[in-house]
Image (cartoon, rainbow, N blue to C red; front, side, top):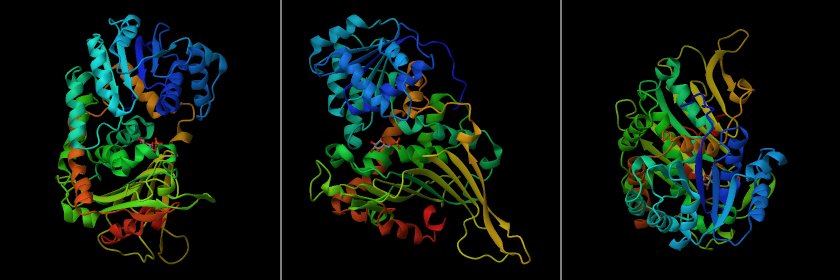
Length: 489
Ligand code: BG6
């Protein structure tokens, strides 16, 4: 998926609904600014920032600048001033169709119009139908939908059915920002750009796979959103299952969007369905209590703003999944995500099988035969294997090859996930967006977990903030004689 980005200047209109919201200010505008300073846009291209607040253009741009300055990126004042020439703030009440005429006047329907719905999902239908009422769902238009797309299988299908009345599937860009991360695309490159790994990438050689996306932050000011969501819907149904697809998919025959998405879909459809017993035995639900992270005391989830004091929302989930196909049958995939964990890290650990018979003396756990692909915070690949310790005797010691992509590509700029995805929407490349049937398959697979939690009244186990989750998470792997990566390194 890493391809040479074309430097043709892009001509488009982008309308961001929910432009005064957190996502737009923290992620979208800084990403668009980055793409702008890289000279990607034609000067006629416009970004219309739509919000419901009565604020002036100057106030909006000033606030946007303040948010952008909070990101890692250095902002150049002159360039920011030039960038804001292409931005226009428009106040629109989402449910007032008359006000959409303002947009109709401004947009040129002969060129690409992008509608980015960065609002709460309850506004999606209103915005979409109002755009259609003023004929803005034209042939050159594209719609970008942010997650969460639905609360469960049924509500997600309702949204998809609704959007499908006005936009064709090829005009719909369902964002999963993990797919925009450079490191996630690199995972495809590592797998399908080399024979080295691909030959071993199967049940004959792989013992187990771990996928971890851990965060040290809590829910912060998003308590009200999170109370109705939880880690399974917020992270696992989308980001972790997408990572699983990229790890487990068959090699696609080309980089064509649908060919890649067909392969991911096959993985989702091959996931062994979970029944209540599987949920009891193989899914761990957790919630953080007070603890310490980096020397600082942090509060319990139930003490966060807008969270019920007897909340049973999970902030952690770990589970064991199986893929029932010829490549993967019998290989456990352990997935885990959580907030307020010991550190922010996303990584994939491929544990290869042990050697069939041992001729060297060893001690302790086997940390060799292991490939660790770290997605964030740093982007590295480490290959652990065993080598002989110098000296007399034949004792083996784990050693590793360590590749740091930032050091390897010092002259290249690593783009943020959103920047890459926004440019792909502008260019009309759907490969890094989730197709409807993929989303449906992912929901179908997680539904029994949600239903069993409900039916069996499974409440989250507590874990202290700053740890790796509830003890049950390590026990889940220990039953199979496996350890989470941090427990053996
Ligand atoms: C979002 C979730 O999709 O991903 C957040 O809604 C989470 O709860 C975030 O914090 C994590 O993304 P990243 O890129 O910071 O790892």
